[in-house]
Length: 528
Ligand SMILES: NC(=O)c1ccc[n+]([C@@H]2O[C@H](COP(=O)([O-])OP(=O)(O)OC[C@H]3O[C@@H](n4cnc5c(N)ncnc54)[C@H](O)[C@@H]3O)[C@@H](O)[C@H]2O)c1
Ligand SMILES: O=C(O)CC[C@@H](O)C(=O)O
Image (cartoon, rainbow, N blue to C red; front, side, top):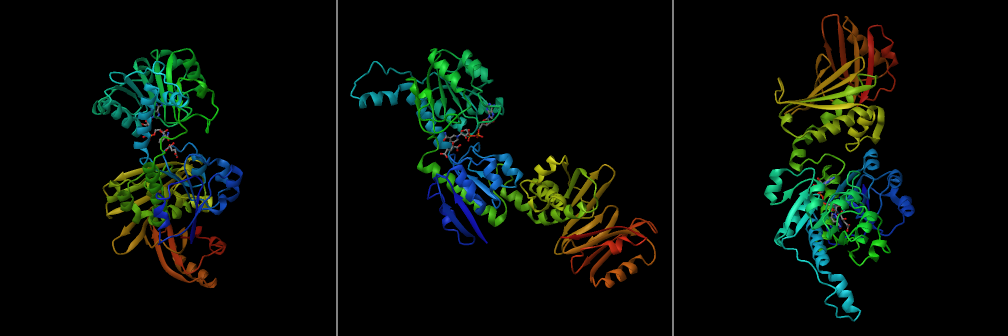
């Protein structure tokens, strides 16, 4: 099968080398940059993979038209140009390259802090314009000044590290910053207000989220020190641009260095008219090294996805280390099949899915396995558009709670997975295991102990344990020319409820001839 990859933003050619030299997969790589949204929407259905930087806006409209898209790769950190909810709903995995441009973005921020402190861009322009103006461009030192870092993640920490090299004091705010982590990094910490009150320079390094939009606003500017300098090399929108403009005009803010703004490109923005502002056109990650590194990272994740079904940097799936995924991968098929089988035991709406992992399995991160098991359950009613990316999301959207339970005690088996479905009136469960050398087995269906190979075409017949019941089913199937390959019978007590599980050679389309029998109260035909 050919995998069609569309690259819609300029990417480092060296960075996509892993894709270009791939031999095992048949890749068709199309580079088409500068497409309008309408043009992208028109062609996206032909692609399995979309590879972008920050220019392409991957909106819900584009995603809805992307009928074959399996993966969106973002060569960079911020995924605010991708509608993640729409991608998840459609089962499209989004991967990014979170580490590849950290150093470049931190270096750019440091350069902006220095350029701002010493008026380097304006001094250079003035020279170019033929002036030798030394009085106008008197700057400030960084030494002994306080840098406020809002967002102490990868880039924020690197910027703090460099600021300390410039003998600055650093105070940081991040909801995940603990006293221990701050002490280790050699920085003070406090709330965003604490940072605002004491910092001479404030740099923001958060993602743009609902909670961070305009977090640096009029109220925060008011409590800042006079002559504070503001830097944004993260995302436009974290700082309220109107409030920044007013704070500069009022003389509260001495200067601002901006790599990003709410609307990009931001040529002609009113902030650029202020002499206190210096700006770059979103260049934080624009180095040869960073561009190569992020493109290599997403290229490798594309290959890993199509070869092994796992990725290193998922944005809309649990991020589970590769060695951990490898430990639970042998159980994927079993989980899916148990899920699919148990879904046929009830026609009622499911309220809750309980998945019990026992034995060795309990020691591992089983989230990818849970996704696959939930996929097996939901596929019965939701069909093929359920996949590992959207299974949990679709369960949630249908008000189904998914609970994982783990126990290292496995009783008779080294490992087992039990899937239980809870509806308003019933609870159904199926247990399965992987037997060394023998493969997958279903070992329990509700209270019946069984031994079934979960494969092919299966008939699950619930009946009353009466003499002749088994013979009758055999005869009825023979009348329909349906050959039985294997048969298992389980019962709770003599003469009580019983179950027959048969594997047959062909899919049975209509089971009414079995359902009409007096002692048979349920029949399900399942194709695994
Ligand atoms: N200008 C560029 O070219 C460029 C390059 C790379 C990254 N970026 C941007 O820089 C930003 C940071 O990237 P990163 O790799 O450091 O990300 P990161 O995920 O490592 O760090 C972000 C940090 O922000 C923190 N945070 C979240 N909400 C917060 C809040 N309300 N207040 C304070 N902190 C909050 C998080 O806890 C996290 O520690 C992102 O927006 C990214 O898109 C820009
Ligand atoms: O693609 C770029 O150059 C910008 C990347 C940067 O904004 C990021 O979030 O990684």
